Structures are given as C-alpha cells and as structure tokens.
Amino acid sequence: MNTSFASLTEFRSLLRAMSACDDAAMAEARAHDAMLTKPPGALGRLEDLAVWYRGWRGGARAEIAAPQIIVFAGNHGVAARGVSAFPAEVTAQMVSNFEQGGAAINQIARVNGASLDVVPLSLDRPTQDFTVAPAMAEDEFVDALRAGWEAVNAEADLLVVGEMGIANTTSAAALAAALLGGGAEFWTGRGTGVDDVGLSLKTEVVAEGVALHADKGDGLEQLRRLGGRELAAMAGALARARALRIPVILDGFICCAAALSLARTAPGALDHCVAGHLSAESGHRRLLGALDKEPLLELNLRLGEGSGAGLAIGILKTALACHAGMATFAEAGVSDA
Image (cartoon, rainbow, N blue to C red):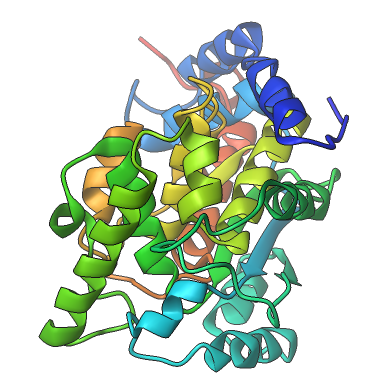
C-alpha cells in the first residue's frame, strides 16, 4: 500500500485498512527456530523478535541490511510559556548539528549501520500555543503527517523515528493525559531538566491544554490539537512503515506519545512496532504499559533524537543474525534428543 493522502479523513481510512502480519511467515520462523542448535527458548526475547520481524518481512534467512533513522524537528508555540530549560532557537541549532554529524544520533546511526535523514518542519513558524487554540490547523497537520509519510525510504528494512523540538515533552505529556487520563501531574516530567518551579509551571500548562481540548475527537484529532509538527510527522512515518511492512523500533516518551495517537485511532496500528528502550522521562513507563510494549533496553536515557531506539537496532540485528545464521541440529550433526 503506497497510496498517499490529501486529507485527514483519507489518512484515517488508510490507517484502518492496513493489513496484519503474515501468520504463515511467523509459523515458518517458529518452526525454523525450533531446529536451531540451542535449547528451546534459550535466546529469550531474541527468538520472539526474530519471529515478529519475519511476520512483517517474510524471508527465511534474510538479515537487516538497510535500517533507516529519521529525525523530525519542529517548534512549539507553547515554548513561549517557559516550559523548557532551553530557548526555542535550540531546535534549529540542533538541526544544524545533526546535519554536520555532531550529535549523538549521528554516532549511533554510524555504529549501527543505519542511514540518517533529518527533516526540519517549518522551524520559522511555531505551532499555536495549545493552551489557547489547537496547535495546528487541519491542513498544517495533514502536511506534517504527509512529510513523515514521504520521508520513509521504501527500500528500508527497519525504521527508527526520532525528534527534536523544544517543549515537545510538554506536548507529549498533554497528549498522553488527554488520551489516557490520569491528570497532568501523572504525565509531566522534567524534560530538558527544568527545576521544581519549572516543573510546576509545565504541569499547569499541560493541565490547561488538556482542559481546553478534552473529548474533542480521536487520537489523531488530539495529536492535531496538542501535538507538534514533528510528532505528527512521526505518526505519518509510522503509518507509512506499516503500509510498506517495515518493522519499527519506537524511541522514548515523545515518539510513543505520537504512536499512541495512532493506536487510539485504529486498534492494532502499532503491531509492526517494538519499544526500543525505557527512558528516564517519568511518564514513559506508564505510556509503554498503555501501549503494551516491553522495552528492549533500560539505560536511563532522556535525549530523544531516536537515540534509544537507534541503540536497539543492534539487538534486533543480532536476533535476525542468529535466526538466519545458526546451524540446525541436522546441519551441524548435533543430536536434538
């Protein structure tokens, strides 16, 4: 399914019409795993990951050869409320750093053999402050979704999406609170490292936004109202990956909040995704629980950029390498009794 979309209604229709994984391919993968030279279950989650990946990609012994990382960047009008420890100009400065190869995600991509694409989204035009109006008009929102959709390389065999945007943990907290309940205090964390006064202000801002936009629609509508262009683009990229049957490793709190908007619009929309890591942002564990995703890593990261998911590429590569490269009992002449 490579069809694009021109409206939010069309995007919803595409999302709800996407196919499921290939059960036959998963069964074949499980059968092959049972013949490998190891006790059943000895490789733990690596075995499950290999079977899951095969369900989306097929192929008896293919390995990951072309992983893609995309970092989307956007600016938020709500940043003017002072919810971040850094000014909004840092978004554009970090985009330049990505483009020059100087950020953590550049090194993570290089070490893990992934391509890296950086997609800035109207950085000179922040979204609206969501405490007074929806963050994006519908046409702006669709443009951001489509930017994410079109950024996915159809030749990729694994996708990671990351973000850069001052105040986007505020946006993600508001989105989680709006879609899952629990109140602003339950979801709001320190983000870039705000102090206690800053955290109190940030929590108030999240509460204001949630109150203004409460019960105003499904996950995508809440993403339009409370999100940012980079969150919308991540959602668009996740949907395109599903359409192309490209497995995805989800990153941290912000990425998972964007993903939540899809899950709350079309059940099963994240079946092609695994969680790369548990971040240090306070609401991430709760968000992963709501998504029913168990993280592959827990390294106390809170950087964003796709960094935690990028690190998890190596785990998935290893799972596939073992599944594809290990000898069977018959091939190795080892008794399986």
